[in-house]
Image (tube, rainbow, N blue to C red; front, side, top):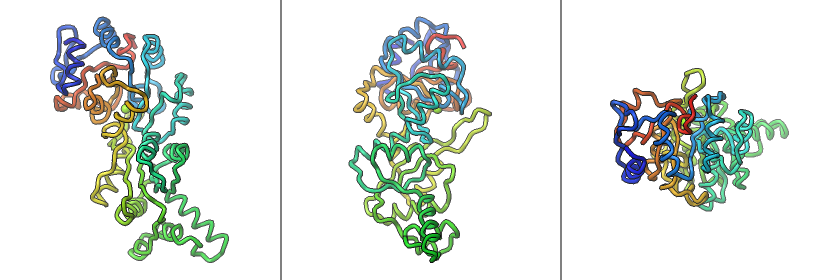
Length: 352
Ligand SMILES: [Mg+2]
């Protein structure tokens, strides 16, 4: 299997065949490379100018840097590769991610970081959105919406507003019907509090990112917006099922929240993260990315590898994240990466 053949396979969508220079997985037709396959690695890296790197499961797991990450990034930069750090994780903004990189001793430029929180704001900008967002998410998406000049409101803000009105005017009902009705629903769900829920008329989109305070009340508010506000946009930062934690435990991903609301409204959200159709054209437009000269490194078949395969990029899966040998063996041929490496360092020809 040559790199040229793998590139052709990337463009045609067919899986890479195994070859004499690398050890193939018995049940998965992806080429296995280690740091010792120097000629093959050189050919592979010479072919690409941009390397898109997933973060969780590639650079780190949870808050722990994976061995060899810093050395691998340094080596890839030394070889003249442009790096883009792409994550479906929406819990942090670009600025917050940059601080995480720095805290872990990794030097990156802000423009190299593309989290799903930023993608959500960029998507709304791309469609000329000028109304208010009902946000189910944390400060990562909130910061990016603010940076893009997009107004938003959360259930927590509505409840705080109602509490403020209540304490200031002493009426107990609040002066803002929108806020007080949301607070009443949050306090106790009844047929009456739900029927009396008043929607903010300036809302024009529901955006869902990772939200550890996700709740049935939020599903109620979001579904009412999507069902009752004409033209209300529905945006998901990603549809990830679960994320690997450092202790071997998997935490439920944003996809769980998105699917709850999708089920309630019988409608699909626009997925602006990896695995959706919007992100790659955005990267090509914003960063001048040329898919035929790019390679994506990620640990998920349904997001990282899917994005690469759909866009004609070479795909590399390190075995440091959520994809196990059993998952690889069970995958359809069209879902497989072109290359499997033990870790990111191996792609850079380093032994860790
Ligand atoms: Mg990952």
